[in-house]
Image (cartoon, rainbow over all chains, first blue to last red; front, side, top):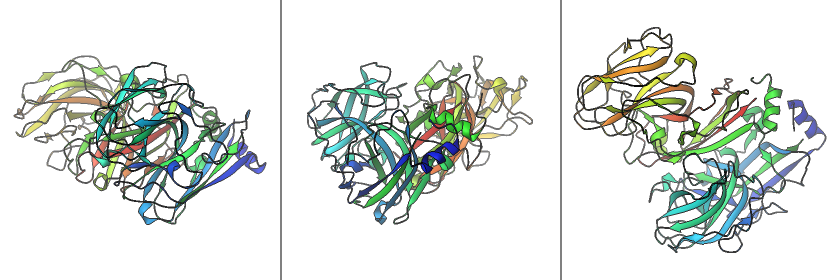
Length: 284
Length: 289
């Protein structure tokens, strides 16, 4: 734990940290501007995430090697934090854009978006990090394209351990890699990365069921994530840099086993871009 | 307690005494008008919409647990909690330029009848998070589309010193046919004021409101809610797709305090004719110590 700003500097000087790089050679293509998308389903480093697993079964996501942005080795009993971020894109079509760095915690793969039956999840595993679910959010990632609009009702257990909580959203026609979550039926500009939660809820511990009100087509992975930090890319080729101590007075915590990736949104549609960046991690 | 140094702030954050919340609001089915203020608390998104429930004309206290507040981490006394960073963005061109204002909604008087010119007596003693209502402001937000007949708003309130019978110092005009969630007295027309209702000379806060009287019935059955808020910060949205961000430690040193139980909601100033179903995303970060 850092007690003084100088402690952060000393940790860096002593090499008690890690600088990691990512380079995505292509990203999922939007159907329309204003949508959100999952960069983990793009090619490059970190490697492509296919959301493999058993249908409807809770599947923990633990960063290892090139799965998720590599954050260095576990450092317990020290704590690891993000000190700086940098992002850059070569594509004019991806500027301006907004990125959110998330710790991907767990996913439920192969949710059948054609089925109107209540699909009950098999929670064989619990959250590997943020165990109580406080601050954890749900994002529905399209893994096989949706071809129609449908209202979807999600049942979940909140961070207080109360089951039977519900929320709903709308799918839209979506490409693979889109976070297919619209607040208003048929309105791409109403896209949001995270499904709204029931009144008073501040997090999700597990997903209990998914029910499509009509057939939307394709499949989705419902992913539980913990949002860590935002960063905006304002113009192509210009790197944007963020120093958390000086510019945000925050030190986002990165837990051992974190599986980090970015989600992103842009005003323009049909973008597939090269994005690269770095994270400076500090341990103390 | 509060932060005694930047080192102290860093130490508290490093120890986990911090909270982050990602939010979004989606504007309604009708476009907004440039130059007017809107209360985003009644819109769908995360957090959920404020239903403005309660008995008409009776005070309703709102807190973080009311369900429609930006969540900020619960009560922290004896520590004090402060905003450290906020950001917001929209991919929709007509959402900019705009201004967001974060407020602590103390509560509201629901069910103000917008189709009568009879004086409406407001009931209940507000429970406030700010002693004597210091720094509080009020606004009237449409909860149903009001009628097309022109009407002014008169009101009587008790100020921060406990002096009752304080009234509007100027003529305040409401917008005819105001949509949900327009702050009805804001806009570009004569005698429009926004986002807050003018207060009598010398007043710096509001303890309670005793009555609301319209100069004419608006012409359609409709209601509004009178809200008491403490403004905390403003955040200009300048460019579509580009996040507006405020660092409240270094960039705009202020560290606005979030009181225990604060019900944080956003007001939105439309700089352009904001299209229907426009999504505005954002995040808030705070720390306590």
